Structures are given as C-alpha cells and as structure tokens.
Image (cartoon, rainbow, N blue to C red; front, side, top):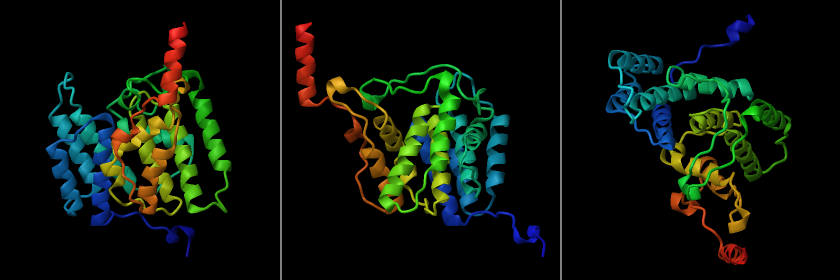
Length: 285
C-alpha cells in the first residue's frame, strides 16, 4: 500500500452539520448589519436537504449575481451577504487549517474576492470606527506600518505557547486572548471580524472542540462587541479593557455554559468615582 492510498478525499458534511454551517455563515453577517436574501436562504435549504452540494450552492449564488447585477448605490449589500455566507459555509466544511498569517490572510481573500478590491491585502491606511458599545468612541487599532510585523509576532508567540498542563478554562481563556489580539490588529479595511471568526472556529477544531452549535449564529453581534470591550480603555472615566464578556461567549460556545449574552450589558459606562474625579478635574481647569 502506498502512502497515497491512506488518504481519502473529503466528502460532503452530514445534514445536521450543513445546517450548522449555514446558520453560522448567515449569522456572522450580523456583525456588519447585513441580511442575506431569500434566494440565499432557499439555496442553503437546498444544500441542507442534500439536493445540491456546497460547491454547487456557491456556484449558484455566483451565477445568480452575474445574471442579476446589483446597483452600485444599493446600500443593503445583499450581494455581499449572500456571497460571503455561501463562502463561509464552504470554508467551514473544509477540514483544513494552518496556524499562520498566510492562512489568516487567505481566509479574507477567499471570503471577499470580487467584493472588495483589497481582498486578501493588508490595509495600508490607519482606521478608527465609532462603536455603539463605546458610546461613539473607537478602539485603537494597529498602525498600517506595523500590521505585518504585529501579525508575525502574535503568531510566533501563539505557536510557541504550550497548552499542556492547562485546565480547560485556562486553555479557553488563552485562545480567547489570542483571538482578541488578532482582531485588534484589524489587518483588513473591511471584513475583519468575519475573517477572524472563521479563523477562530477552524482553529478551535484543531484542539478537538466540537464547535457545532448555534452560539456564533445567534450571538455574532455580541461576539464583536465583546472583542471591542476586550480592547478598549479610558481610565479617566473608569473604563478598563476586560475579557470577561469574551470569556462568557467562549464558555457558552465550548463548555456548554448558560451565560446570558446581552449586548446592553457590554455598554461601557463611567464608574461613579471616575465620573466624580473627572468633574472635579474639569472644574479646576
């Protein structure tokens, strides 16, 4: 028997797994306020019921928009939601992964090819983004000049880390910290959270975690807000970066915990003492 005979081509996922893949793929569009079309939903159901393959579902969506081009001024971004949903489902079905910057960048390229002209390209400009959960403030993202070096450093640190001997809780908290840092770099101009989520799900599988539930699908917006809160400080009003909310999310996702995942609880609010100190400081100016 040759080595090649020990391998087999990957087949289609089972029906239950296909349902999970599509639920997650569609749910992740929430992070950018996007909603897939009824056509995408119908196509997903065709795949879930075994009438077409995931590859055929992707081809169907791509062909649909070639035949029905969307107007440039369409602000609903339905085409993006449909195409990216189908691509996420396809990618999550693949049992492939490499813990490396090229893998991370490749995920972005595959998700957004033909949608963003910068698909798979590290941003070359600095960004800020007004966040509801921060009352309009922004997270400080990596500067364009340091993105690649920062990515390489974070992956080097993660690849050198030894998980042996850690409790399950410690393992999950470390993974959450790595994912949070990866997201904060914000390597891409758009699609950063969806790319990070796909990478995280595939990474978690390499640890043997069975990430086959509806936590990502139902709480994608909470996931993003938790990442924001894990990377924001404003000491003068008593707001400190906290991984608490991200740990709650991963606890539900991986440990079957029943933590309440409420976006309103993530809203950054000044502490009473910090507010008093700030007011006193302003009065003395």
